[in-house]
Image 1 (spheres, rainbow, N blue to C red):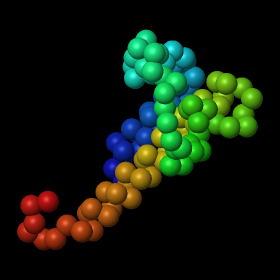
Image 2 (image 1 turned 30 degrees about the horizontal axis):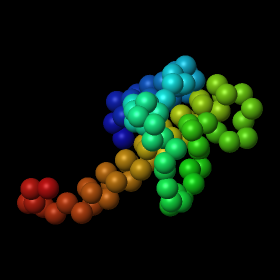
Image 3 (image 1 turned 30 degrees about the vertical axis):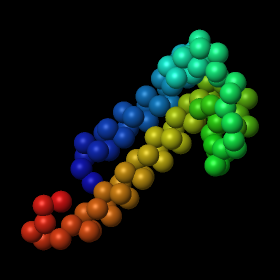
Image 4 (image 1 turned 120 degrees about the vertical axis):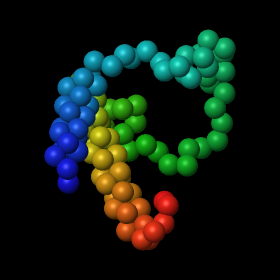
Length: 100
């Protein structure tokens, strides 16, 4: 793989592990609007599946900062692996002379 891909992954991992624990604990935009307009408690139905890393923290880790950093590490690696696999799949499907 290209050297710049590995450098980019390294930067992303450093940010995910060491910067994510300092992220704001305030609700995101959609949660904030739901709270402001009073409909945040009206969610219905069951989730299709439960998140393996709920609320961006690794379950079972007592330190909040460490749990958030580990969740960032796991998420970044998962997205990287999925992107590489998707890229390889799409590259293998490309036929000579196609415009895709």
